[in-house]
Amino acid sequence: MHRETISRLAHTHHPIAAPVGDTAVDTLLRRALPPADRDARVLDLGCGAAEWLLRALAVHPGARADGVDTSGAALDAARTAARERGVEDRLALHHTPAADHDPGHRYDLVLSVGATHAFGGLLETLDAAHRHLAPGGTVLVGDGYWERPPSPAAVEMLGAGADLPTTVDLVTRAGWTPVYGHVSTREELDDYEWSWTGSLAGWALDHPGDPDSADALAVATAHRNDWLTTYRPTWGFVTLVLRRTAG
Image 1 (cartoon, rainbow, N blue to C red):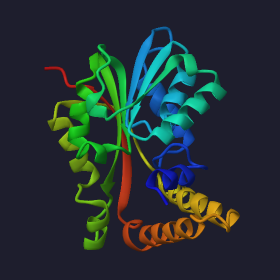
Image 2 (image 1 turned 120 degrees about the vertical axis):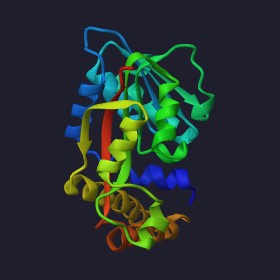
Image 3 (image 1 turned 180 degrees about the horizontal axis):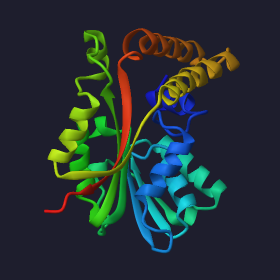
Image 4 (image 1 turned 45 degrees about the vertical axis):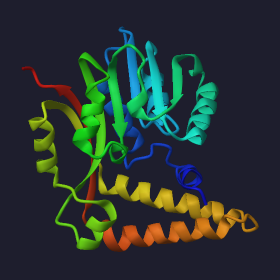
């Protein structure tokens, strides 16, 4: 089964493609967006199906948004959702690598949540966001960290990383000041993983005659086992609202 299809099915019941709950998403956006009486330009680097942007447009009636992603299927889903929610006139979607996005203007808010791997890491993602950020603008970024020392198998699976204090220290040393943040709770982390594996497995069970059914069930089973046995005890997720440090 194609990777994009797996992701689309796995996020059926958790459209925010990160372990962040609805209440936290709303709070983060309200903290990150300019006041509602001002116009705002918003960019999501690696937007997927653009759920963060759709919710930002709902929160801020004066906002206009651009989403950039390399998945045509995800962008098609975003267009459909934008029409259904009545915000298609305020959302532009670009099927291109984030590094090639050149709109000719800067943004008041740049997002990249759960997509830092596409840029090579957290600091590289912040560099990419900074190139698009208007003076005084805000970045909303989300990434994983280690809550406690991981096993070698967990590092091999998810890559090297740091604990939360070190992660925040790296961000501040790179010239950013956190003005808000959210550390995903155990409930949010578990809900995301159960939703991911359960949505994919449920689709497989509902479509036993589909040629991809067995593959989908195998992927869901393997992912669930990896989560429960390898990284659940040690992996966490933090979402930061950042501004450039004065001077």
